[in-house]
Structures are given as C-alpha cells and as structure tokens.
Image (cartoon, rainbow, N blue to C red; front, side, top):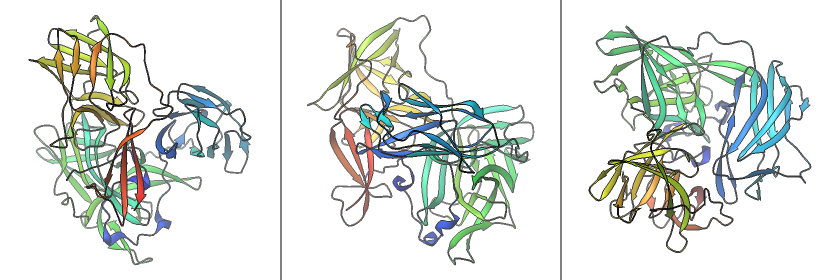
Length: 510
C-alpha cells in the first residue's frame, strides 16, 4: 500500500493525521495567518505566489502576483471592476496594472508609506490565464509599520553556517480539529558559534502557506554537542485586525481549554526548554522528542497571554545538506535535444539542453514549470546515465526540488533517475517516468513525465500550452495517505495525471 503526502495542498487538501482529542478546538481561536493562495480554476489547482509576502512591510510600491504553470497572463478589457487597495478606514487606492509572462504587477505611485493595514483585492475574471478567465477573487493583506520587535532574532552572529533540510512533523488547527503533516525538504540552516547554536525558521508549518517565522531561536551549550534552548523566545509577529502581536516559542503539554472544555496545549512551566544535539553527520535533533503518534508534548507558539496559537511541532530535525546547485562548466558546448514524453496516444515534445564532458552529462529543462532553467547532473555508467537528484531551490514555492524515476511497477516507489544511453544513436530513454519532487523523503510530485525519450536535435518548441489538458489517469487516497482502488463512504483525495505532466489533486466526497 503506497503512502502519499502532498505539500501542494492548502487547508482542505492537507493530508492530515486527525487527532480525536482535539476535535473540539474552537474555530474562534484559529489565528489569521498570511498564506500563499491556492484556488481552483479550469477544474484544477493553480498555485499563486505574491511578492512581497503578506504581513509587515516598510512600504508598498509594487506587488507582483505570479501564477505557477501559466504561460501567458492577460487582463480583461471587459471587466467592470479592477484591482484596488483598501486601507483600514475604507479608503480606496487604484494601482496601475501590467503583465509580463505569468506575472501581474500592481504599482503604486507614489508608494504607500503611511502606517496602517492595507488589503489588495484582485477581482474575479480580471486575469486571463492561457486564454481562460480566472474566476476567483484574490486578496492580500499588508501592515506598514516602522516599529520592529527587537526581541525577535532576525540575524544570527557570525559563525559556521550549515545548510539543512527540514524533517518536521507539524500540527496545526484545521477546520475545528487538529491536523498533522510531515514537512520535509524545506530549505533551512543553523549557525554555530563557540558556545551557542542558532536554529532558523523553527516553526515552518506549511511551505505553501501558514507560518514562516523566518527568525532564529538561540541555545546555549550545556554538554559536548548538546545545546539547551530556554523558552519563551519571541519568534513571530502575527497581524490581526490591523495590529501586530508577538508570538513566542514554548515547550507545550496537552491540556483542557477551560472555556470550551476541549483539547489544547499549555506551556510546560516546569520544564520550559528543549535540548538539541548536533550529530556527527551534522544533523540537529531534538533530544527526547515525542514518538510520531504521541502529541502529548510539542514545541509550539503561544500569544502574549500564553494561549496556544494553533501551531506546533512534535518532531523538529534539521538534516544537514550539501545544497550545491548542478551547473555545467561555463565553456562547455551545449547541444539542442528534444524531450518526448506523455502517454502513447499523445506524446508531447519540447526542447532541452544537453552537455557532455567525458563521462559527465548535464540536462537543462527536465522541469517545465517550476525550475525550467535548472540542470541535473549525471555520470555515464556502462549503458546508463545515473543522475544526482538535486536540482536547486524553487524560491516561488520555497522548496528544494529533486528529479527521480517513479517506479510504478512493481515496487511503486521513487528511485534514482537513470536513462538508458544510446551513444551512437544520440538518444536516452527510460521505461519509467520522471518525477519532480520537492524533497528527498516523501512522494509529493509537483511535475510528472511519462516514459521520457531524449534525442539530439531541436523541435523549436520551448514550452507547451495545452488548450485541453486531458486527464489520462486517476488515483484515489484516504486523508492519511493510503491508496484505495474503490473509494466510497467518505472523504478522499483524487490525484489526476494530465497529458502535459501536471498532477492535480482534489478533495472529493464519495
């Protein structure tokens, strides 16, 4: 039975571990957190990023909104409503708008600098994605403030910086209950000084939304490679109703909310600290963290009154990682090749770049949507080219991306990407599929290409736009990630694979 985990999911799509003891946690306590928007259009999910991110900013001169996987973004000339910015007093400001590629830019001249809370609204049908109207309204909230909470550590002192990936098990309030998800592959780091350890972005709950603290917590060396982090430590500013509130990291224990008589977390006042150890391989682990199915204790955030905000980790491991982006030598000759992939009844072609140097091989363009400029590096071994999986960091979604072979039969697992190499014919092939995955540990899949074939020579096709991106296969999963062949009497995740290689996930009721 295959396990399926999806980080490409917003609230209702998260593959959760629902915990019965927290089912009554009230919706009124759910914090207001800026999120990356993920909405449904044309029967699929569109992932949308915004720059700058929602939250505190110094000023607002321009806001850029990008639609992942969209080739051409245009604006409706018939729309009766246009994007607008509303301040906390209800005053309206209309920005100038323009597009480039898949990005909408809203510009303000002069820049907005007055302190306060602002809401940008993009009305439905204003944007046209590859010729199809985008029938969702988008909104983004910002707070302009000159004050900065000096208790939050935004910069670590000089020291040894180690690049890491996250291996977290995060819990958060969702639809009146508590849900959990493993979070792997998030770019992190830590800084080591003579007697202190600084961990960055400790409360990273969901890479496509939710909390990104983007601050450090500080620990003091107590023994060998062990560091103690005393709490509370200020880690995050949450904006709600136009006001900033500081959130603090604490060691938490399960408790009963006296107002609602439902499950929650409270501060462990007797032992409000956590010990982390640096392993020989460079990993940083939380010592004596709870077992995977034990939520009785956690590291989580509370507000200024000590009330749990709805976000916690029961596993917080920093996996050291040599994040060297593959890149061919600058003076190497790059050749035009054609990548052909897709089902047998609708094979699609596009251009990629290939470079050779002795037994080293580089390919650019395996990822079509998320990292089209990225290279993968492989080594010729006999009749095969074996590739290192790491491709680089996709800043749009805040994840490392990796290329793998997806072994659909018989093992149904991810494996190292290998291509059969026909040197004399200038060709590479695989009987298995290419999977672009946002981490090394779980099957998430942001891109998927069936039975790839690479041949020397250009098609002239740099990108593909599908007017009818047909679904060619579907699978079903329970909310805890188990694949089922005949879903019935419950809530399920449907995973559709399209001709273009997209993977579309939808929450359904059978």
